[in-house]
Structures are given as structure tokens and as C-alpha cells.
Image 1 (cartoon, rainbow, N blue to C red):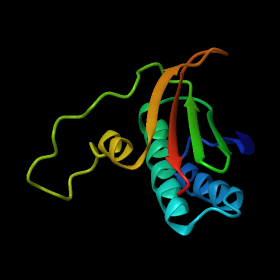
Image 2: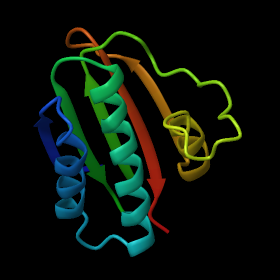
Image 3: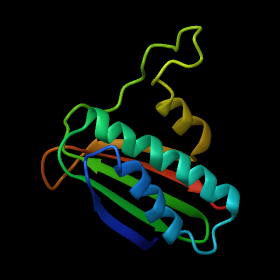
Image 4: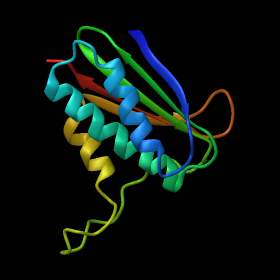
Length: 128
């Protein structure tokens, strides 16, 4: 896969917006529906890194003719875990990230970072 972008993001409320701009800039030639999915997923993953991770957040975007791969790393140690099922209140905040990954990616996962503290959550989106 060809690297399209790699950036360090602030661990602030502005990080998801910055991440979406990075993905948009890297998305030359992607179908619009693939871009929409990538923007949704990167926003979710970076928001989780801000809320539940810690320290520096890194975003890496790679793509080839078949797949787009997004990687979001942070310095927090807990790996993502499914939240309890949302209550009847559809406006509740949280608990939708992992089901989104299951529904919108061909594959995703998470692992401890080999270069230091923290973890990387990665996801692959088909380009067709």
C-alpha cells in the first residue's frame, strides 16, 4: 500500500476535525462513498483516542487500488472493548464505534504499539 498521509494530532476536541481534513486531502481518486466511510470511521477512531487513549495521537492513511487503510495510534493502554448495548435512548453518547467497524470495514483490529506505550487501531475499507 502506498502511504498517503501520516500526521501527529493534538489530543484535543479539534483532533477529529483535523483527522477528517487529512483523510479528505489524501483521498484523491477515491469513490465518494469510500471517502464518506473513511471520514466517519476516522472521526470515530480519533474521538475514541481523545476520550479513552492518552498522549500523542498519530494518524496514518495508506491506500492501493483495492483498499484504504486507516491507523490511529495513541499512548493509552486499554484496548477497545465492546460497550454495553445502547439503552432505548437513541441519543445516548457512545457505544457505536466497534459495531461501525464491524459493519463498514473488510477487516479491523488493534494491537499494542511496538515503538512505545499505547495501541494502534487499524481498519481497512474496500475501494469498490
